[in-house]
Image 1 (cartoon, rainbow, N blue to C red):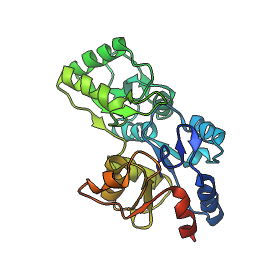
Image 2 (cartoon, one colour):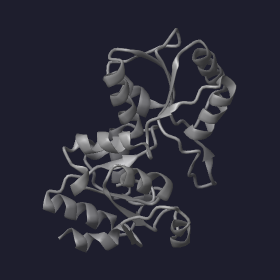
Image 3 (tube, helix red, strand yellow):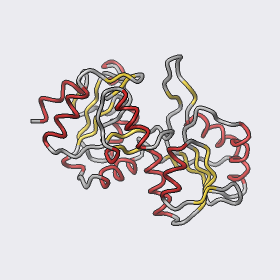
Length: 249
């Protein structure tokens, strides 16, 4: 399941989310909370969810930063990267055996941060122009805040692409790679798994392309009218995750 708009909204738990998670634990159903946000480590997110009254174990958190680190570890073990981002992505890459450097790195990895530095963006552009491979944790153009939308990874990636002529490889949703790595993390199969999300263009399409049942909840950014505009449909639509508790059995 996605996190923002499904379990929490603006740091507040969605009513009934705690009962849904408790029922999953009672039934012994494996689950993951997925997020494209690469700012936080799983431990950070556990603490943030706990502050909202939601109990989620660290091993049940899967971020675009973890998926990015898993990809690079598989593609080029023991490599190096220049990173624009925060502890979520830098910690994941360190744990994958990567060296963080601004001298001839194998990759430029662009993640989420609330303090994008023009100096570091300039450095990324020059490194990519010199041959570094360009990876971005997720394609989201904006992120939510109380004051309104904030520029996010996708927007900054577009800036770097325009300057270099090089498009990044986006790892996070809707890339099915994110879903497959998540399924592998809990030893699950797409035929017997479902993706619950609040966005048609990331959550639902990624679940659909991974061969999973898809459930759209209307507690986040998508309205019923919005959903009808897409050329694909969710398997099921619910007002919120609370409506799904009784269906778990």
